[in-house]
Length: 99
Figure 1: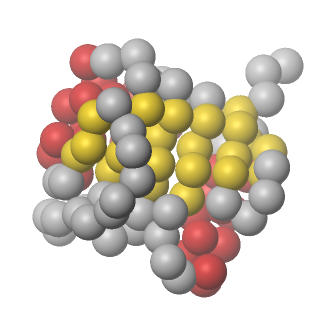
Figure 2: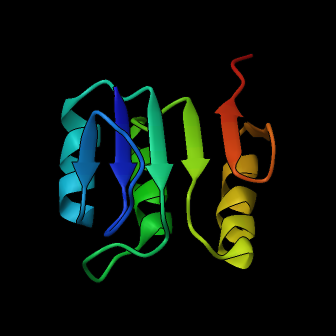
């Protein structure tokens, strides 16, 4: 299942989450193959907070696509993902490599 986590985007996904609460619920309840992440999402928490939450609970999908328009924000999110064992396919596509 492809899940889009953004307050406003025109990307195609199976589920679109417009709030952090909704994104956490979907990640916790569904098997997500690809997560499209924007740093800016409705609520006090942001995209990086959802990634941290998902990692701590073992529900972070194997493939993450960064869709934030800011290159600096994508670099910040990418740094987090690399530290968690993801490999960059390019500046916005990350995949967890299983050992």
